[in-house]
Image 1: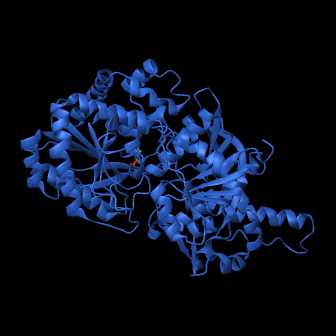
Image 2: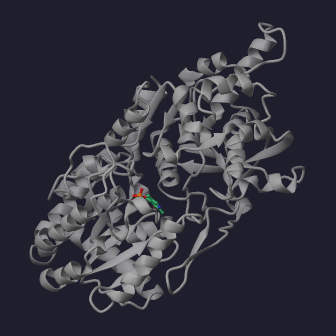
Image 3: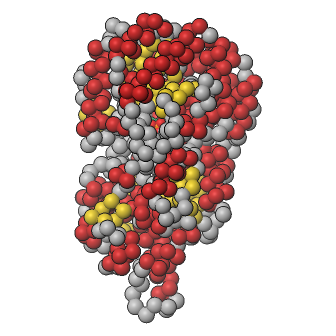
Length: 573
Ligand SMILES: *Cc1c(COP(=O)(O)O)cnc(C)c1O
């Protein structure tokens, strides 16, 4: 490809297929769904990521819910194509050689978007350097910085080695890729040097970095300043040796408070910056008041996440839905009975799996609540049990229900691991009143089965920390309504009683709130007064909500619509 006619998309994680565990959660799944939509819409995109030969990790839970981790190695050479392309970066004065391996994502009409995985496991590298593309979010902050050098700087060099000229835009999916701005400036400095505008060695100065701003697009996915990667400058000096001391000049401009903040670097050097839902855009705007922050609400790739039974009724009633996600609007014309039956089939599939792996004996006739998230504290997975007596009372009065949980805690997140253990204690304590199961190893496959097979998708993050969330969108296209805090995408997706239900009120506040008691109370009221009675006594009305969730939310919260907005606002503007 010559130049200026493609979009380079950089991401630290990506969820492409089940067999490639190179994602940790929503960010990687979003990257995968974005690329699938790019292939559908035939948008010329080239993707750069790291290989992560040992994946994120495989989750094991013992009888008390204590999590241990195992490497999630995968058959790299079976799944990826070899390329001859090689490049190198300098880390701590050592040359780290990289190769690229390729995966091809095919769109609905066969258009291909290539994904290049950078791999440092080459014989000529030291043993330590060879391991730099092993673990996603593994190791310490030093390991992370090395990986970010490989992604940002090595990624740009690899594009050139593969024969790609300058891209129309470089899209940074989160701050992990921000060092690419320095490498683009380095290229400019080099060109200027070659044209003899500069008498001595090329220096990457801040002016060059600002000159590449029009080429860069930055999407932030985090709502808390602590969620952004920051590195002490002495470490940066030690590790990032590629620019031969040029960092001294850069740090005056980009590191005013003595740390390299990758989010600030990306924000300062992008012509278009966005949050991933309207509210998240506003929260981010507050954090970076001197820049213009827009928002493009996330989506999902519908053909990937529709269960088989649901895809079959879409095939029957909505021809062309795979090519054009907006056509899901016409789900409004599908008879409610068919939606109900397709959902029953998805539920059956889930229950076969659950009852094979656990001995709880879940009953497909019983109302089932699903909750699967990264086990991070702010997701408040145990909020539902704040008042267990009230909850069991509801089960006795308004109809019984059962609950299915899943989710991994980051290996170093002790508080996240405690939440899983706490849920295990609750599960055992309530076992005669409410059936609860916690499924191991939440991944793309399990997500697809679980989300489509429950009757209600519960989401309880502490506002405003959920930047977007996407699992509720996957639920919606499978006819599963959400009961959720009005944070992230649900602030836009919730039409009360039509597409699902809200927990608490939307005060429109951007400040942090943690009204656990109030939110739990709201969950209990909605379950007792509205949701359970509707499910058991007015099934037709419940099916109506299921259908509206598909039509109203599926037709909008998808990556085809999302990517069209990136094209109009950021890529080709
Ligand atoms: C969709 C998905 C996520 C992200 O869901 P959230 O709603 O953002 O928490 C995480 N993990 C897996 C496996 C998924 O499929």
